Image (cartoon, rainbow, N blue to C red; front, side, top):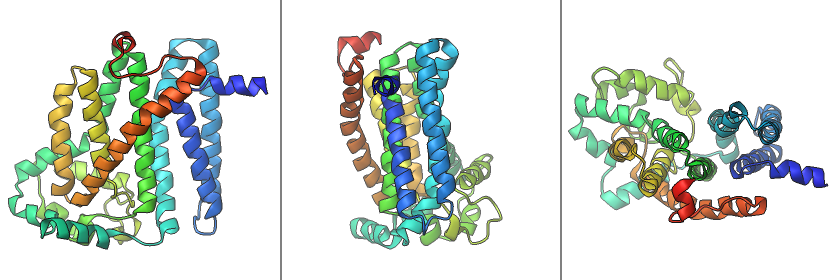
Length: 321
């Protein structure tokens, strides 16, 4: 029993968070195995990655060298992407119905118009180009913030930021199960006409296709509305960007001068480029607030059990860690 306890005490808070989510997905797969075609494969990979995380944590604790330390820090990147693709195969068969009609109705009630259709009158290739580039920078902003904190050896802040980002992704993924939707580019517009109706200059079409491929609808996909990822509410782009902006404000890194303007453009781009309804952005804000409320409690709960430094935004310890 003590051996098992010591094994788990090797884990960072983020390790425990990811293992908990993998366990949650495994249970969902078991509960809905008659609906999810690839449930056995999902369970295999959830188990495999759980074992891998336990091994990374143990080796990092024992070896104490920079290679395993970096592996332990950065394995989260492929894990987040793998989880995103796993829920792709789960949301639609488990939920069974899309919520777009309700999201459209809420937007229409608030604004009297459909915002993406209203904004089309202001469309301009230069504006589209800038906003498509900003939208595509979604992963770059938190990544450069993490890198600056690590380079400056602000390790406690680095670990807290990584934990908060992963928690944010997990909460947004749960939101997709609760409110599956495909977005206005399919429901209020003709998806196949996007490049014609919203042309850019040089990079727009390439970036748009790259994003579409990530959502399982590469060029030539027949009936893309049926197979696209149900990942509209909450707007994860809005939620994660607001988290990044907020923590950049709190931590005062140099990259904040890049994050503030690009993040603002990105959030506007989610509607202009027809990826999201405005209510999705409001949902993203709510999920961001929930993430920032839960994150310090959960992070410090595990660190307290391990006897590690606790995170506080204004503590003197944070100035040096």
